Image 1 (cartoon, rainbow, N blue to C red):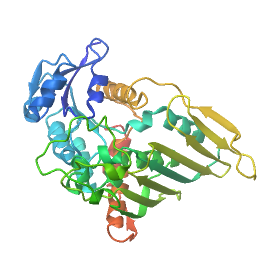
Image 2 (cartoon, rainbow, N blue to C red):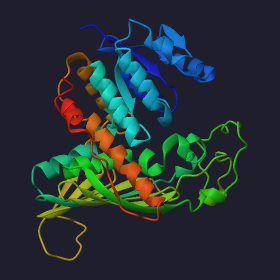
Image 3 (cartoon, rainbow, N blue to C red):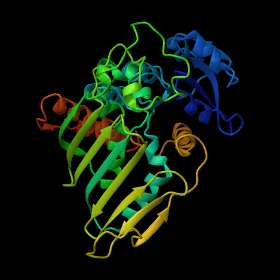
Image 4 (spheres, rainbow, N blue to C red):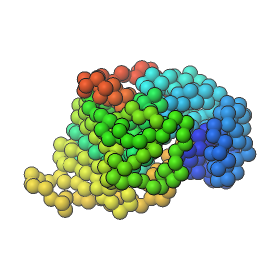
Amino acid sequence: MEDLRIGVIGLGLRTSLAVAANRPGKGSVVTALCDSDPAALKKQAGRFEAEFLTGDYRELLDRPDLDAIVVNTPDDTHERLAIDALQAGKAVYLEKPMAITVEGCDNILRAARDSGTRLYVGHNMRHMGVVRLMRDIITKGVIGEPKTVWVRHFVSYGGDYYFKDWHADRTRTTGLLLQKAAHDLDVIHWLAGGYTTRVNALGDLMLYGDLPRRAPGTPRPEGWLQEFEWPPTKRENLHHVIDVEDVSVMNMRLDNGVIAAYQQCHFSPDYVRNYTVIGTEGRLENFGDGPGDTVKVWNTGPTSYRDDCDIAYRVPAAQGSHGGADTQVMDEFCRFVRDGGATDTSPVAARMSVAAGYMATMSLRDGGMPYDVPPLDPELAAYFDNGQR
């Protein structure tokens, strides 16, 4: 089997995806790299045997020897880069979130359909062991029919990861209820078996708005991802623009009647996601998401709280970044580019998670006013649900 030849645009924090795609002799190889920062391009080039390096992504798209493009750039560039790559006839891996507006997502979907070029959106949490375990428990009917899903997201390093660079600027992300929550909203939809139709949300910039900022054009300090300050009020060298919320809560009604809630805080002392799914015959909850952690199920009762639960499922061991999900998602992408067919990730689902996060952000900034999520054009949805044929 000849290796797929892959070009990568963007060599920042998600370069781990490019590394996962670079498997010479085993199905795929990264042969071309692009980054607008010459220093980043030089630094990362040594991790690959890429034959072509450039600072202009259009030079990458002009190359006839590339089968696919991996887009790992900041969120506000996704729409333009994805559409240009699709129109150039390159299969596209697009890192989440798909875009920073509902309109941007729909523009990408239309470009994929109109060009007939394959589009894959990497919601890698669908390949995390804990998420697949929870979905398997639900699919087997262990807790009956899901009726409500609650997610609490504690982000200990939020001040470092999201308030020291472009993530803090709403013109680049819309907000963290879209940028950061897109993964979790997608998982809520996947576990519950439906898409959000109506949202309301509250939130605020409660802590990071008053902390010291860098002057415009000043680079991030060395070691900014290795030396996390604590308590969060001690943080400094933040981005010069900070106008996204650091605390947010949102409520959702899904098209199948499920009620869901999501909460996010960027100055907690720990980093963890906590999922609760309550069905007609029981409740499941995850306690950590790494190998050796558990998903607990209570499906007898009624009783008071029992820590020993009724069934405890061990999260499977995994290797690689994001709990092994990056490798799995790249395996699926390469198989999809080569052979087509069904995938666990879905461009429609990616659009719907962005739409839920976008409309929740509009609600949050409108005093919690409920907002309806714009439906996707049924013909466009059918094209992707039918395997992009």
